[in-house]
Length: 203
Length: 192
Image (cartoon, rainbow over all chains, first blue to last red; front, side, top):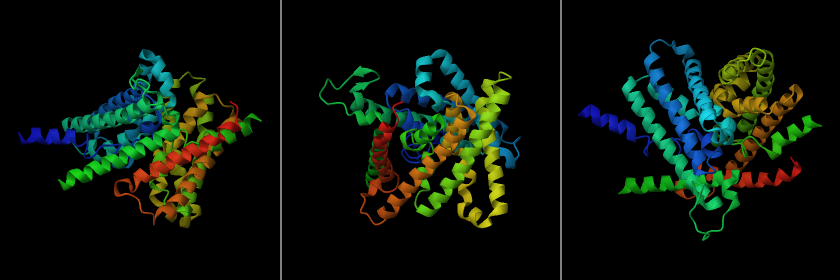
């Protein structure tokens, strides 16, 4: 029973308490770059999930075989392999999304969220808990990307996943889908997340 | 002419940090003081220029002739990791003082996504050798410009009364948003 609760805790910490985007500020580059529409945000989130979960499982399996001095280089090669796979699958199945995300898919290799989970967790823990940890962190990452990209799409073009939602009530703010809007939206969301956390801590 | 256009575009119009969101981690975390931001910018520019050259050579003399495009990401990241290691050893030997100042930020250049992004963009856009070289230098100068401006603003902000939830990352992101809007003004420089 206790093992089960610790697994749940392990999973849920990525959702809010240690949310990779809002709390740890990791993986900022894809977070900001591809969240102009909710669909792009979701696609990037799922690609990152695939790479993070697969790399964590492999790293926790081979952790005893890798000498300490070359561990970072080995992790990066493992990550780069899965990113190449994700990139090719995406280009074959969803060419339109793949073209839109462009070089940001290969840039998952240097997403510091993935490397930091290998170094901080997968290289020290069992396969099962590494899997759960990676899944939780990925879920938190996907949720954060969805929150950011949905906000930007709704205010920027008045749509969500390509469907009109505001009914012309809000005039689209072009800046929201431009680079400036990415920084401003994330800044406001991070501030909001901190505010909610401090409120929760008080009560 | 093309070479100069590539340079201006990389520094101002398509600034790596403020338009492509590359190198955000050091941008948000390191840029507290102007002098350390400038040293980090210089070291990054150096690594970027070398990476641009070496990855172009690898791409055109190994990957394309032997038809190995799927090894692109793995080989680029290995090039970057070994270059950073070399630069670190070089600086340690030549200027121990600078090595001390940069400290932990030197090895962290490896995971600066601006460097891998540079190699990927150069190969995606089929730049010639000279264009790649000027793209590398321009991207480095653009990165330095962005983090130095940010460090200058943050030095001033130290005594500002910022609402508590926005302290740190929140206010930095908001400033970056305003900076990005200001840099949009450069878009008219190039008609491309």
